Each structure stands twice: as C-alpha cells, then as structure tokens.
Length: 462
Image 1: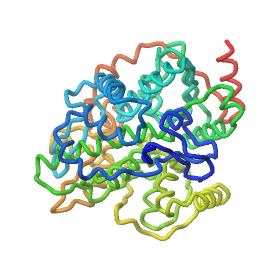
Image 2: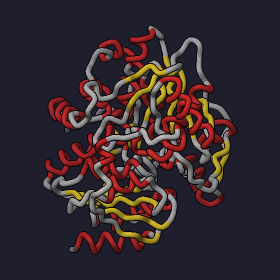
Image 3: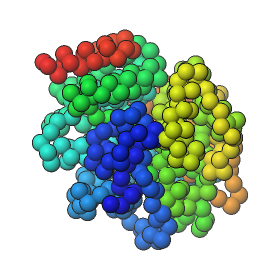
Image 4: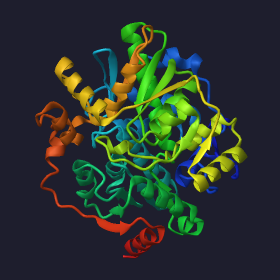
C-alpha cells in the first residue's frame, strides 16, 4: 500500500493503520499521535495544481494521504459539500494589506479557520459511519473556536454525539454562545473548572482509558485527529500559489498565530511536501512555550496567562509531539522518553535551531497596537489572534519574499478587543449579532476524567 496512506504513532508502539482507522482512532492507542509513514513529494505536480479552485485543490492535496477505500468521486463530493458552506466564492480570499498578504480563513459558518477542517471532518465521519452503519461519540476540548466549529460540523448528523469541553469563564462570550446556543440533541457542552490545558489533559486521560474508549466508540475532533491537519495543509498551497501569482515571487514566508501547534504543523507538512514556502514564522502571545522552544531549544511549561487572544492561551501544545517526532529522526522511543520527562518535570531541552522556523512573542500591547495600526492606516480589521501573527510577521519581513499572514477568525468574534484597540464598537457580523437572544444549554463540571466520563455515561444512557 502507498506509505503516505498508512499511519503510525509518534510513540512507535502500534502497527501501521489505514486512513479510515486513523481518522476514527483519533489519538493513537499508545498515547501518541498518528502520522503518515511517508510525506509525499509533490513538487512535480505544483504547476498542475496552481489554477485549481479550492475544493479541487483540496482533493488533489489530500489524495496521496487517503487510500482507495475512498475513491476520487467520493473525495470530490466530500470536499465540495464541505466548502459549499463558505460565503467567499474562492473559499479562502487573499488580500494585500500594507506590507503583508492576509489569508482570510474565516468565511465558514462559525467565522473561524477551524471550519476549514471541521466541515470536512464532519462529512468524513458521516461517510465512514454510514459505510458500516456504526456510531461514534466525539469528544473534544476547546480553547475557543474548535468547539463551535466542531459542533457546527456534527450537529444533527445521524449516528454521532459530540461532547465539547471548554474552560469555564475563559472563552470569549461570543465563543461560549456559539457553542452553548446549539440545542441539537446530539450536542453536549461541558464547561470545566480550569484552563484549556486542564481540558486537554482530561481529553487525553479519557482517550487513554482504552476500555472506556472502545465501549463508547470515542472519536476525536481536536487537532490530535490527523484529518484535521490534512485539511489545513491545503490552504498553505492555495495561499502561496495566489501570492506567487500576484507578486511573481519564487517563494513566500508564512506567519502563523499558534498556541497548539496544529495550524503551523500543517504548514510544516506542506513545506516538506514541496509547497514554495521559505520559512514559517511562529507567533505566540504571552503564553510563549513554543516561541521559547524555537529560540532557545527549551520546551518548558509555564502558567497560563489570560490574554486578548484566548485561543492561544495554551502552555502544552498537543500537536508539538508530531513535530518532535520528525525533529528527533522519527524515533518513537526518543519521543516517549522526552514526553515522559516533560510529564514528570515540565521541561526538556533539544539542540536549538530549525532553519524552517523563526519565532516571536507578541504582547497585549503589540496586539492592540497592530489592530489600531491596520484599522487607521489600511481600513482593515484584524482579530486579536491574527494581530499577533501580523505583529510577529512584520518583525521578519523579507525584501525578496512576500509574507503571508494567516487570519484565523473574523474580528466580530472578539468585539471587545477591537473596541479596546480602536475606541469604537465596529466589529460586527450578523451571525454574531444573532446569538445574543438565543437560549443556551451547558453543564459545569470539575476538570476530572471521572466527572466527565460519568456525565457521558448518563447522557448516552438517557
């Protein structure tokens, strides 16, 4: 079989599995994350991909990673349905603003970049379950946008329930309402008393309880699920093609605001596949474990600081383990040892440096100043996460290579931050305005595996 469509764990203790099993497994049964056995080199195909519309490009980029159990016609149908829900005709518009090119990833149903992966994942889950007439109980943890996008991708679908944990009182009011106002019977919102890292810990503990996972047929929507990363690889090709077309540049650099390392890991894979990306610019807020690692070689957990960019308020980046696997030469035993050290001590250290990355930390002051500058000088509104990416992207501008900045959410999702930056309430969107009067449903639980599992048992028994 094509090695790109077979998946192994970062911890090296499971036999390779095909794409279907990888998607439904989510987190590997040895506690690691799944990766393709080989990243395909697609450089020879780039010219034939350049002019493709977004859904066709998505099918072309994904095809090498998916075996023949999903044929071309089915894959085409899945991507067409997934991106028909987006309001922008080209799905992901690219806009030249000031010295950078903004890649707008927020034109899906919940106005965040997570829709690009989760609309696809919802359709993919439905297809895989229908084939075998089986069911799935999806469990996720969110720092803000994943939850609403996952719920939107799964709500009302047959044979699926979804349980989403968010940190109680630590997501924006809009993000909370986007989740808790969905009252479909298969949607269950849980506010856990703690941080996003607590929710992510509970999620991993639940998935590592193999008997519970098997009994309740658990599936993952967090970016631990390889299909999430796969769908995100596509827009790196799309953005670089469009910017090459408009500038004539041979290569581009891409600035990515990130907390969990999922979005930027997709860029890392795209670059390894042959996308014309010179380097990735990693941007964090004050929760800067990732920026510190790339600048010092030390990966050390800190205390989560609440910021204006809450989706990045993370000190344990779950997708980082995938990058770590490649960084240590695809050595699962080494990954296990490093992750064990991190679990016990909260830190580990590697030799500093990766020529494919530069990294920086943006403060709240940087965020507000960047929102203000782009509004005043260019009439363009940045959400606070995108503003972090733009602020760091501007530090690494290159004379010869254009800088693409990923815009991860519509500014209306973070209206209070925009108002603080520009002095007026101008970040509006009808989807957001319509949330205010909707009824909501949510349960508050301690950040403990047993409490969440008990709630799931009772809910599914009812």
